Amino acid sequence: MNKARLQGLSAGIIITTTLFAGFYYGTGLFFEGTTPTADEAKELLVKKGYLVTHPMEEAKKTVQPKDPDMDSMEKGTSKKVPSIVTYTIKVKTNMTTAEIADSLAKEKIIDDAAEFEAYMNDRDFSKKIQIGEFVVTNNMTYRQLANTLTH
Image (cartoon, rainbow, N blue to C red):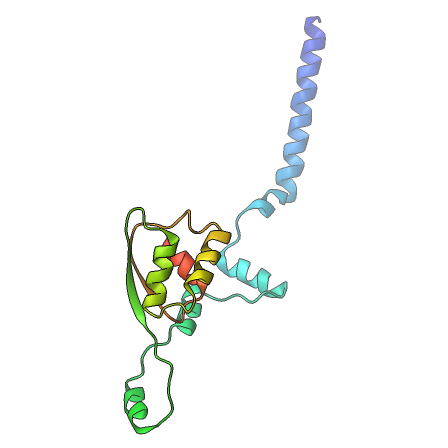
C-alpha cells in the first residue's frame, strides 16, 4: 500500500467518524441514555399503569403504631383484638433452619415450623441466613421473615 492510498483511507475514516459524531450529538439522541430523575421515573411508571409507592409508606401500613386510646377501649369492650407478638431471635453459628423454625413456632411467631422450614429450603433462603439478633413479629409473612434473617 502506498502513501497516497493510506492517506486517503485515513481521511475517509476521519470524515466518517466526524459525520457520525455530528449526527449523534447534533440530534440530541445521546440524552436518551441518561438516567432519569426519581420524579421522571415515577411519572413514567404511573403513565404505564404501575402503582408507585415509597417503601417507608408501605412499612407504615404493615406495622401500625400502638394507639394509647386503644388500651382503654380494650378494657371496656369484650372484643378480642389480635395482639402483635415481637420476638428477638438470636441466630448462632451452625444453627439450622429447623432450629430457627422451631424457635419461631415456640414463640408464636409462626404457626407451622415445618411449613416455614420448607419455605426457606425451597427458595434457598436457608443457605443465606446470617448470624446475629433479629427482631421479628407474628404479623410478618414468611417472605418478610426470610428477608429479615438473610440480611
